[in-house]
Image (cartoon, rainbow, N blue to C red; front, side, top):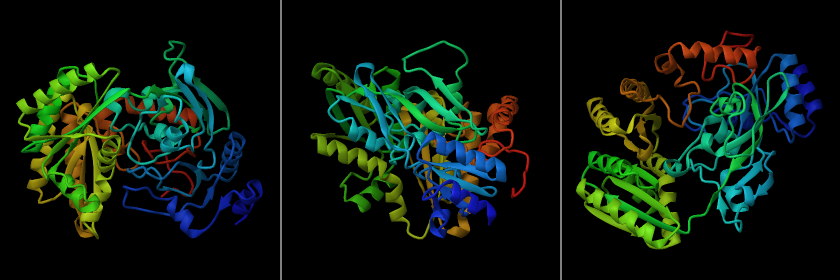
Length: 458
């Protein structure tokens, strides 16, 4: 094809046309469909990104930015002829400024690689979605994770962005300061935009001091409702908890089978406190335990060493893969919702009851300190529509309770049907912003918002 020959001439040594890579870049971890992209391009500079977008405009081919492929809602599935712009070669740590508690990175650098590079500075980057995602991808999807309750998600920890628009113009958004009231906040417009408005090519990130004292607990309950009630009590006191995670009995059983963890197979809260003094840590964790026992906690285990702490949080991050291992040959429908904290117990009761009503098995886990939880429903392929119907009813109930259809996974393809109910007339203004910044609809088309069909669209 003439267009591919032109692409290879433009990017010698940076284009992959193999079937396996084209297919790998046309799917993510949570969406049931996969489709190969036209080609995979590996830019190594801002200029490469600009050249790729110029080529895309000339040949009317869509562009889908790719980080590490860990998204869950169909962000990477090509809805029309598209190239994948894999930013993994733009993976440098450009600058660390410990005195300003910030660093500057390229989008392909992963969060684990960043924290490894920060060793010795006394600082760390806290956003921890579990997967070793790229920092550009984490910004593009508005990621958060286990530490969000204390440190915030990507939106709170990105100070500035460099973005390339569809037309090739480079924008510098935000400033390397803790706060600014200068002009419209265009930076946050691109965080969570899922590659539909521009390509992120540089990020200035906020760093935090490593905590001097850490206390990590596992608290077990007779049921999920008691665990959720305990989490609400902790949050209502204003205790500065750093992590507050819910895992139900199925998750604990799966982790025991997958990792040999030896956990009691009961619903649990995994907690962690960060403090600057031993006295503060002791007072905070003691009060939290009192609240847990009042809510019906059965037993408490403390992680006594750094290695045990790491194992506990690695187990939390492996909960999805543990469930996959427990249900071989199944497909998984994953959804995340968030509701106001005061409605969380009600929402979890609904999720459990609906699962039983529909004859489904699955687990509930998540960042309950943020009012956010996930359901993972394993089904055989023929029962996939039933699990999707469950997820849809769950989202509708969350919206009725004043919540959101997605707290951290993003919209992608799967959840855009819920946006009219959640956003009302504001959705039309989102479409106008998309049309202004990407008038030809080349940037990750079909994601977040429906767009007008264009050549090759299906």
